[in-house]
Length: 306
Image 1 (cartoon, one colour):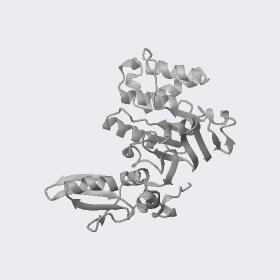
Image 2 (cartoon, rainbow, N blue to C red):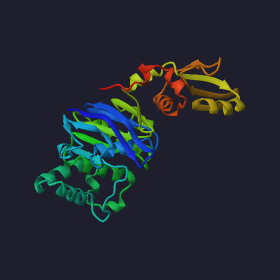
Image 3 (spheres, helix red, strand yellow):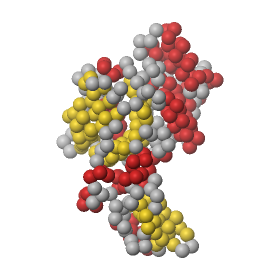
Image 4 (cartoon, rainbow, N blue to C red):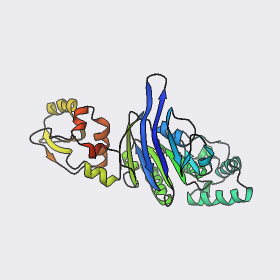
């Protein structure tokens, strides 16, 4: 099973390039699509879900051209958009049966599948409760249920934890991890903690460009000499913020203890420390100086195929 994205670009108007020559080859597992708001994540998700067409490029599902023939994927696709609406007067059971009917599932098969999903997502006890009484986390679980009705081989979830509390976010991550198996799950988010513990691969995107694609441990290995810790005064912190990306800052009695993300030693007193995925994310999305990025080397910046 494979999803191939080749030279994909999406342009809006004359000057807005939402996606800029994206190339990815994705195999089964959880893929974290990580980028700041406005990076192009939702544009890419909509194209993969066959809801919009790119300006240029190709998407292949199992070798078939998704752009030319969306039907090659739709019966194997599950999609949870960033904004998921429900019919609030319906119960979860009624809502899912309604969507199953729209998907053309036979009534008996649909009833069995809905009951199975309600149990899987810990919603059986509230299955006959109107959706208007559901919390944000419960609605997200209904959203996942509708995306799983057809047992999809490709599951796309776009910013699924926005508005959820920490406990609901953790529960949602565990759910996706349990469901991965032999399917491809693409989780788009700007929150590093949503994917750092569950993603098999992480794609970092910013301003429409794919900046990195690797396993979490590979990203951390590439960052091994690019995170620095030092102690500085309050005035020095202000000046350094204009020059470098500061990923962590704590005020102590002897000054500010800060972490700086940079391929080069920022201060003589700075020492290398163990990087985090948050550091890697900031490294790729915050460095603006092309020369500085180039100094990191092609091995670090190159997108890495599965």
